[in-house]
Image 1 (tube, rainbow, N blue to C red):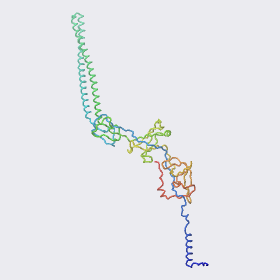
Image 2 (image 1 turned 120 degrees about the horizontal axis):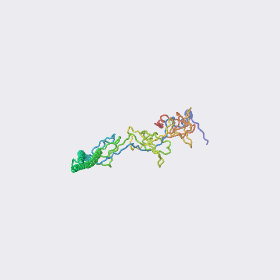
Image 3 (image 1 turned 180 degrees about the vertical axis):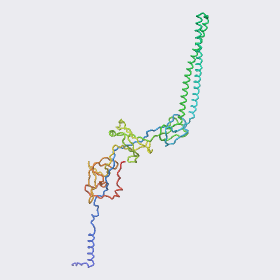
Image 4 (image 1 turned 90 degrees about the vertical axis):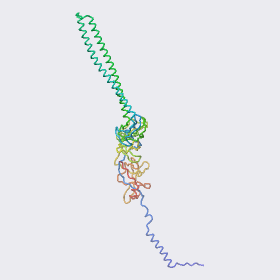
Length: 423
């Protein structure tokens, strides 16, 4: 049996036509999918700036006080007083610690008694000499008188006026006067010898007294330098001797750094070079100093000892503090610097992408010559000028002439590292 086709009714046909018309209209009004796609590679940009770049070497070192004195007693004794506290600033002669002086005071009193006794002996010997000198004057006068008498009697005897026996008597008296004078002279010599011994004894006693006084002074320990008092490990009542450290006085207005410099820097190493101090590598800036001494010798490790002096007027630096020191060999102001991430290395070539502004910004490959690197910044010696815009991120998808889409300033400002300005 043959099949007969049935045409759709009028309503069904109209519905089909309406659907086709709507579909066609929607197709004509919608933009092509590619119209919403990005028109270039998203990148972050930065303006090329200039700053001062430094050539430096960094070393770990330790600050040392130029003067540091460990106070130890000259004598043994018990601590009876502490005049200062840790951290006090003291001058030369400031009392620090008092030790019990009783024993030394007794020694001083004994020495004074010895001096007085020696002085009395000396004075007595001197008085005896004075008396003997007076006795000698009388003996000399008596001898002169006897000599004159002998001459007179001798003349009379020769003239026959006196008998020979009278001259013998006068001669006897003259010899007796001479013997008396000789005896006085010997006694004077002996007295002078005794006086010399008495003077020596007095000097010895005086020296012992001076020593006892010095030892008594040693009972009060004073500051030998201007500085800051360190830790005081002793307490009142402690018994100490010459082996005990009472405290340390540190003069830290100026501190010193010992820097072993590689011998390869010998030609550049000189007194006056600046040195910067930080808490650690990339840490907080502490201050500056300068090279104050360069050793004329090279060590076995092929380094040259240099010392740097660091002013510490505010007292914030400490003796024994570990620091990160940068010796500044050279400074180049107005140097072009860029982030290290902006440099692309290809074999021996180094380049950046600069922005070619036009109707649509594109990236242009620009060869550069780099120099010193400091942290995340690197010097560009050739190839860039201040004010140029360069790509600092997103270079992986770039090539010369590729269109770019700069990220908004807000995003760029939040994620871009600030240039490091060298102070």
